[in-house]
Length: 442
Image (tube, rainbow, N blue to C red; front, side, top):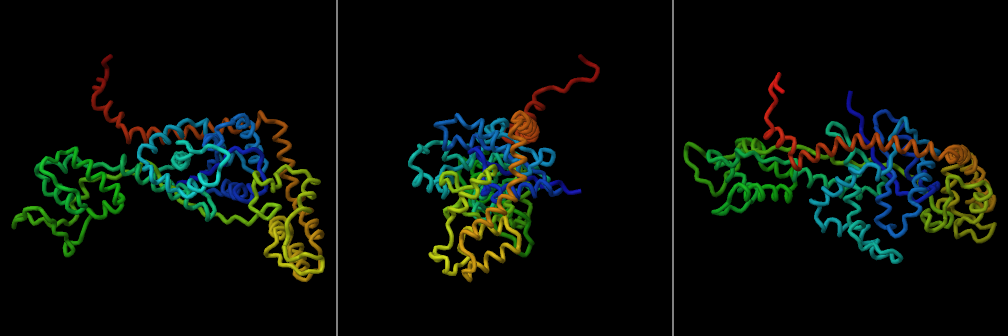
């Protein structure tokens, strides 16, 4: 039976969630947790919140409770997924530190969202290492839950796929640094031809005073530059008719330096961390009541516990097709935010009524908004009821995420044991210097 695919995703604790969060992420998370091919880990990213909001942390703890309550109300089930708090799994910070050791500064400075934030955010001081290193912490969050025999997936919309790509690059670099082994045999006198062939094929400069340390450093640097896949392919097996004649090596009749694939035996590759892959999820368009992207900072949202009267008031204020200036003007539902909401909450017959009435001016915008609000209220009512039930017992909510954090940490500890051994080799060293105990001896 194939191993389950691991799913990792999270949210910053910004407080109570709105319907944009539901359709942008939570709806898909619930589907994934109910799919038997996935094992899901969902976390509340409180450390990520500090990267931009470190100046005031007074609401972080309460916001964690609020967001967990909304998750449970939306259908996340602690029996089907692991919900946890990022800071309750300190291994995330350790892996972040270790990944930062191998991540080039230029990679982080070139991240488009980093440059955009520096230009646009003026009310906060984000010229910090934490903010710059956000992608490295994000990478540690993701790859902590990878397994060598299972695919690691990150559910994102198409516009966020690039965020996962830098994690893939960091993992590749880490695996090249710590999962790529060069055999000591390559430096033995009898294998001098192989060392020179390797240097020639990957363009490592040959110097008179080169020692083993020099060769290891230069070969590893080339593997990083070329990418480990390309590096090993360059040294891998070749058909004899396509053999590569290596420059700079003395050839004679007994030993023609035509490389036919014996170089790769000097190199070992092991994936310490799993490269994540994107799981593209379709997210419907859900604009805010003012037509812009739904956001708390714009105040244009409907929260998952919004009262009926507030829903009706906000719906009446919604933007519509700007071409409909008068009741008798026909409109275009395809450019109307109210119609976008109808697609989410209204049955097919109401959707058809709204589209036809808009195009023919058969209905006014107020009628259309009222019908949409009625259906939104029907949709949100069970979520709101579940939320009220969980909100009445915050101790239960806290217990759920505490238990989830313990479960997540068990996985994280296994990952970090593997990572530490790959970097420092202490298990190997201890076995080397500690004499085995004799049976029957004290």
